[in-house]
Image (cartoon, rainbow, N blue to C red; front, side, top):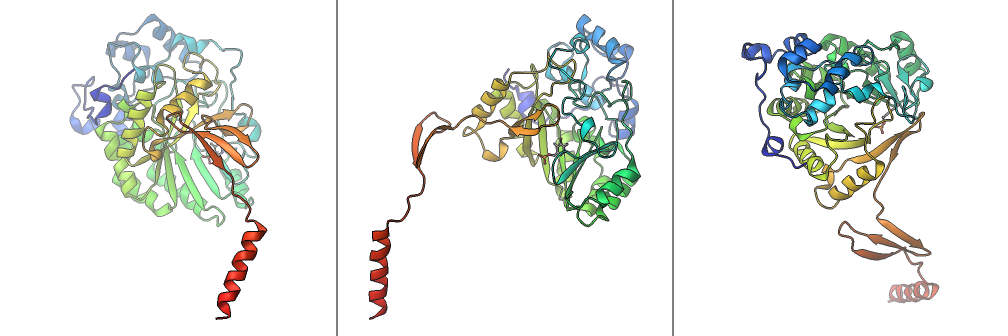
Length: 398
Ligand SMILES: *Cc1c(COP(=O)(O)O)cnc(C)c1O
């Protein structure tokens, strides 16, 4: 997998499969949401499905809905069943099989909720699940047990109880809004939530996790940016996996957020057949920097039910990071993490550059494989101390 020109430059994705639509419709986020591809008929009218996908779409109706914005759908290569965009959003039959290591709630979130919808796993920060809906659904969603509204379990955020918990828990200084996708809310509704959080003095830092800038860049309006700006310090973590997702529309949307002073990070999930090569990851992180987005985390795909066809080995992730470190800008390199099953939290995984330790020294290797012996600090010898004291005081007598 080598990135093509299409993937290393910012190309517009004006109407392709919706040729009858007027351009102003295409730019209207409400039109984009109303015209999402969410049925087998709609999908089959627009591209040739394989049997593997057709069965997947039929099964998805009872697990995690299919829904794809026209903007994102337009990035799919119609003739390539292995298209990396297609694998992220079009269900496949493999989703129906749960490997023995897989779970419905792989990060143990349900058992770390003091209030429904609020996950308090780390000492000083919480994950606030504010909605179960997204603009489009990722087939490897870590929260597929509750997201999209078609599964057996439902997210029931208890707003008042959640705000009261935050008010009486002063160790919480960082609130991460996620879901679902918080940017699906209207400006007004989001403004009210952020305003309420900002009345709590110990909440210093607010973050929003959202794939809307990628699925629905039209939603990032100047009005939304002006509203967000009132609630600083506010960061946004976006989610992109493949360089093709960074179109000229997405770059403009990210530019509007960055101009509103919102620091941007990216979270990617390492996915088989989507972005499991150094070439693709490098093209992605370079484009992210061009969009003023700092690559933040590269996640090992969670052990979510029906995900084995999309997951990679841990060793593959390590070798991708090894292929980036030293070979490109330090700012471009995300931290590879595994979210520990059952609520272990994010565990950083790094290539090993510390190859040996012995008393007083370590042996290191660099990105080219050169080996370096590196000493710990030496204690100052008593004789050197005495000699210098003697010198210093003899000058003072002059
Ligand atoms: C990811 C996560 C956070 C935020 O973690 P950071 O490492 O600070 O980005 C907080 N709470 C939960 C439950 C999370 O899964």
